[in-house]
Amino acid sequence: MPRELAISFAQQPRRTSALTVIYVAEDKSPEGRAGEIWARTGLDFQRIAASAGFGGRPGNALDIIAPQGLESDRLLVLGRGGQGDALSDTAWCDRGGSLWARIEATRAATVTVVLDEPKLSARGVAELAAGMRLRHYRFDKYRTASGDARSAGPETVEVTISAGRLEGVDAAIADRDAVVEGTLLARTLVNEPPNVLGPVEFASQANGLADLGVAIEVLTPEDMDKLGMGALLAVAKGSERPARLVVMQWNGARKGDAPVAFVGKGVVFDTGGISIKPGASMQDMKGDMGGAAAVTGLMKALALRKARVNAVGVIGLVENMPDGKAYRPGDILTAMSGKTIEVINTDAEGRLVLADALWYTQDRFKPRAMIDLATLTGAMLVALGHDHAGLFSNDDTLAGQLQAAGMASGEKVWRLPMGPAYEKLIESRFADIKNAGGRPAGSISAAQFLQHFTNGVPWGHIDIAGTGFGAPNSEINTSWSSGFGVALLDRFVRETCENREG
Ligand code: BES
Ligand code: MN
Ligand code: ZN
Image (tube, rainbow, N blue to C red; front, top):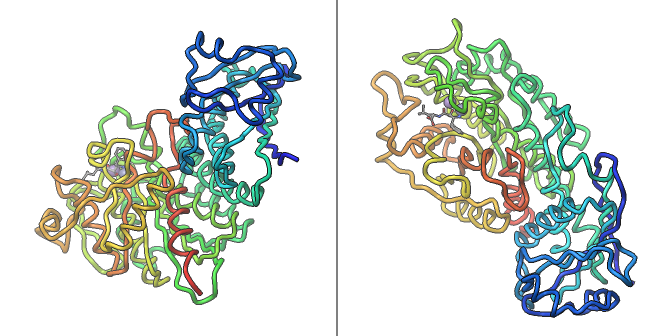
């Protein structure tokens, strides 16, 4: 008996029709179960493929409408590419994404996807399902007009993956789905407009994870003032909306196991402050909390899949505004660590938020590793564009683990150098350090700044300014924000925290 699995997507009402999807390898005819299905149509495959230019390559498709001999209203034949070689996880995920795009275009209500691969694994099926869900995501809650293609589709699409006998498919799907949920939460937080999502509203979203067993604490400006968080609080001074620091704890491993900590920049909107940004694209700065969103999404993923790890997520939530009460260039701040910081540019605010969030995290939790995510520098976008995030680290082992997790998850990172020559860029005339080092190596001097607040803990800094939002559409994402970091760090946790002995 073929194993069947149903995935439903909520849609707007319309007609119903049934679709069957089969895959055909490069330069082959339909084989196995796909071959049986094709045979029932009585059609001449070679002739149709030749005249339609179908070669079985990824992206190739044959769309047979009202096929004789089949109950389905439509038979979609998709190219699978080279036969025999097992696909990577990311290739399965991408395949799921492009599959969903095809399905959506047909507006079918019920879909059967026949997978008949020589090297099919439960994990491959789970990645396919994940790719479909990630591609399905749209952020259209603020659209009142309903003229787009999706609203013309059926209310729910029932997708059945028919994959033969496979061990552990349900568990693999549930596990992968937890990470998808985290990614989608991160995307939505980034997509939400800044008038809707301020620090308080973000904190209450994070508080929702309490239902999943995540312990949540929310610190107010008064709490942070007592802790001496003079850097984070300075950034918040120009905003009417008070800052928050949210601490999320997922304890899935033994009590007393040192946690791994994740720290996120959560600037809900970055005007630049008194060093105000130019107007062009300023609306994008609603996404300047992408690091905090990824950390929150990650905590959701870990809780949903009950990860066997002790993990801490700390996010600093502020708004950077120009105002009579705002901090200024020239101000000298004292961070929680005791270090003094000369403000050169109030638009270099993210590192000030992280300075206190990082120090607090290592001081309170003594983590075995600390990884921060931040849309930190425009220079990162200039250096690496949208395809890799920048990685900075004081620990080669940790850096290697993060690079490997990037390759495996498809959320890739590229390591950049650090060192004493770059440290010179942030030497201050008046204080211990200054918050901006000028244009050359702008992403590196930001990382050097952060390193001052890590207290020697193995640390990784991931600058997602280019990857968090604004990337061109991919197979698995057509939304403005990407949710970058959730899948990467989930993979890191799996490989380096959960796979250990003992
Ligand atoms: N949030 C920005 C960085 C950013 C820019 C992220 C574009 C995503 C897209 C950050 O706070 C910032 O303004 N950085 C300054 C630092 C400079 C003043 C030293 C920058 O990159 O120009
Ligand atoms: Mn800024
Ligand atoms: Zn910023």
